[in-house]
Amino acid sequence: MMTTATKRAATGALVGLALGDALGFPTEFNDVPSILAKCGPWREMALPTPAYVTDDTQMTLALGRGLTRAGERGVCGPERFAHFVRQEFVAWNVSPDNNRAPGATCIRACELLADEARPWRDASRMHSKGCGANMRVAPLGLVPRLDDDTRAGASQLQSALTHGHPTALAASDLTSYAVRLLAQGADPVGLVGRLRSYALEQRTHYREEWLGDLWTRSQDPSAEQFVARGWDECLAVLERLAAAVRDANPETDPCLATGDGWIAEEALATGLLCFLIFPDEPLTAIRRAACSSGDSDSLACLAGAFAGAHLGADAWPEEWAGRIEYRDELLDLGARWDA
Image (cartoon, rainbow, N blue to C red; front, side, top):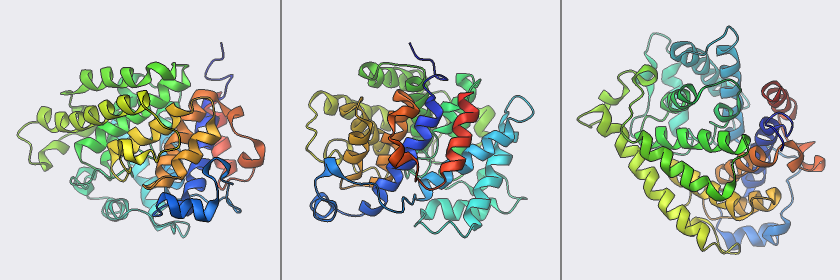
């Protein structure tokens, strides 16, 4: 049986994420008939030339850089993690390469985070559960030697830097957990059940060490009720996902079953659905996600991350992987974590 290192799960997940992102970039905001008219049969969709990515991959790399810097001197604690990831998000926001239609929530939060005197919790957009937080969280499921409490806390904190809604926190936690399970060799057949069990266990667990008093900026009467609201929305979409997997029709727009993916819990569910329909066909999985009526680049990048974590670096043909934008940095991070 392959280990995480021998299958190079981190490299596979990062490259898959970027490939899905690039494949879905030209189809975002289009309905399925328009995509088919533009790209031809969805099972034959070609990687664009050049293979440009969106802010989804850019912010994944920013999180990866922040995580690497935070862990350089040993244990990655909450304040150190928040400090370095905050710096990387702010740097991304002012970069001239940040020209790929980034989300308004990320932009506004990063503008506020640039004021170093402002506590990061005051920059968090508490109303937003957009998918911008969980489409970038895969590195936390891939970096080695993170215990599960640290992975969960850091996943929620990186979300809260921009998206403070409890559903964004829970979906980010679930996304990195799914990546971790797949990288470690979990059977895709039982994945939804394991995610549901995890969500039930976490339902009223507020991670104060990582989030501080974030919850007080909501209208909820307690920290437990704050987080439960997010986990309950994720549990509801996991129920829809379980039913969709049972009755999956590969030729049907996946967004019809689990949502368009503009919001966090639907991005998780629909990205997972595309992967679970085709667990051993990674290109087909990201093509199905890219040919959808929803947030196609984010859905395909999540499907690619799940497929790459499951199958490893060899899942992706060199003709595609060799020309993805940011290839060198993706491979460098992947090799660091696979080692």
